[in-house]
Length: 160
Image (cartoon, rainbow, N blue to C red):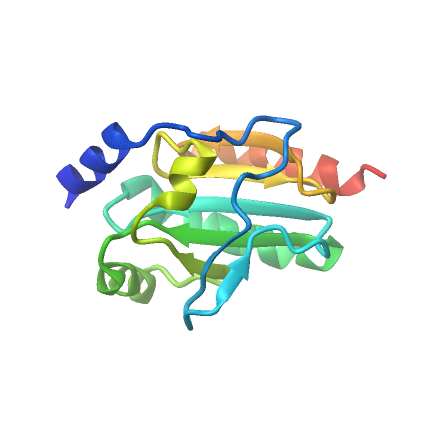
């Protein structure tokens, strides 16, 4: 499975990368029930979009952190969307049984959203402001990243 992930990212090229200051080049991705999940809904003050896969070790570490951030900042306007890129949804569902998600889930088995955003590592995240423009991109996830990512979210939520 890891080789599939490596092949996926070697063949992806950022067609319309999500550059800071620009609108996200993806509008929606199918949700758990098949209905579209709008990535920028115009209601949240901030939207944190995380691209992940079941074979990704750091993704296992990022989910508890995302759940914590959603619980801590959701009432202040943070919305988190986790976009799964597994080719087989069963792989994602098995992962989610072990590592539950308390965030909005979306599934993109063909990886088109990741390609348009310019994802090159797993997990990768994009933070959108209230206008839907990219405030930040982040590749990977380590425990050392948590404080800086949370500080960026907290500061953006305080901004007018």
